[in-house]
Length: 276
Image (tube, rainbow, N blue to C red; front, side, top):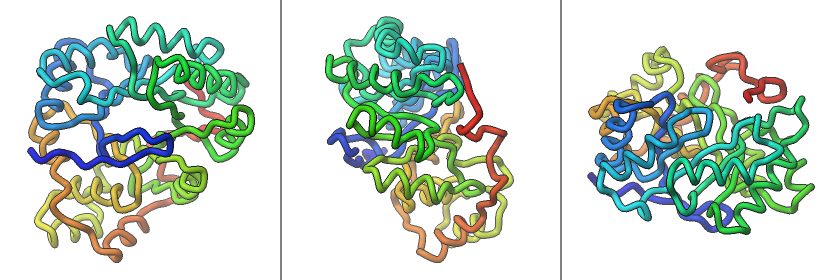
């Protein structure tokens, strides 16, 4: 398997351009699936406290035989820990038996709670203490981003948001880019019906690849960092094999045009959706 290309985040950290999502991989089956992904060549593994599989991630690294230093491990602080974000990070390190984390994100802003600025300061403090190399957020709107940047003078390196052809997040991606933030994409392939959409199928046929590969390549053309998740080794392999072809500008635009205002997978607008 060819080595996955990397990109440099705004804080100078180098990260693979495609990662592996781990929700809801848990238990022995989860360890096997994550270890399989590592053996396939994935080097960015995305987890979260609320996924309840942090321990499985580091066990999978051990089982796979891949050197810890070669894996970019990313987790997320849950809403219930916003007032004690550094402690949450320390707990994750204990659970995962790691000396440091490569990236930590705030999972959701939970605006009605009013503590996401304090949570961000906790991540800044944790980075300064050497507990984590890169810090970012997830599901933050431009207004949320501006508030934490103004309060601390520190911009997130990444913002992980829902993004797929039905919900391409043009405004959010532009806002992230203006602030030097890399957009990561959760659920990057979206619902299955997108894979049957004419622009996706036509591009797959033209390049002799799968529709899922087309969608993941579309993410790279738009500058987002997709985090596909799959427990199936064959799908893990094909999801990673997206570096041998390029979409044309017309193909990319046609897939982006599949977006619609109600394209979210569920009612998860971060201006009011919250998870503790």
